[in-house]
Image (cartoon, rainbow, N blue to C red; front, side, top):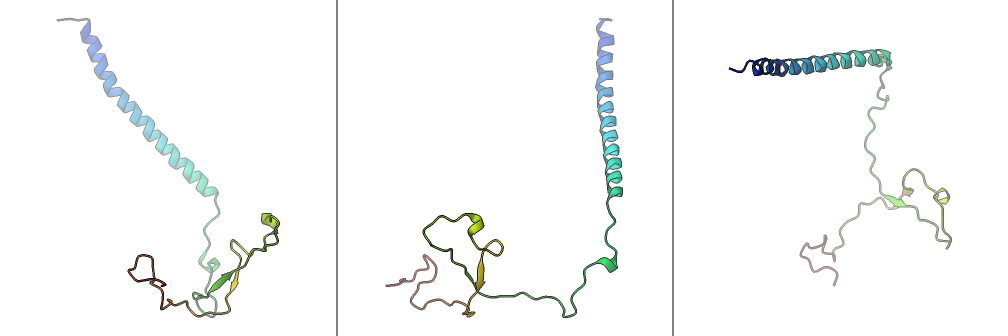
Length: 122
């Protein structure tokens, strides 16, 4: 029997058992620290609003959906290049209420969507 290799084998198995244990202790310590830090940060935040501070429905009841046809505002075509600050807009896209609020219907002479099998405009 080789007496020199025996202590090395024993020490290798001890390291094999101690290293995962130490890694687990470090991980658990990190998780405990993260929870402690999160609770500390949360204690600094303002409290959630009380029920009497919550928004209320208007006296007229809930606001319903508004459906209307909109027409885009035209970009002025004066032949010069416009900068973004020169384009008149209310919000992301400028539009105004259409005079005709009737829902658009299919043209009887149209085939509908592309590839629907109709003859199209002939």
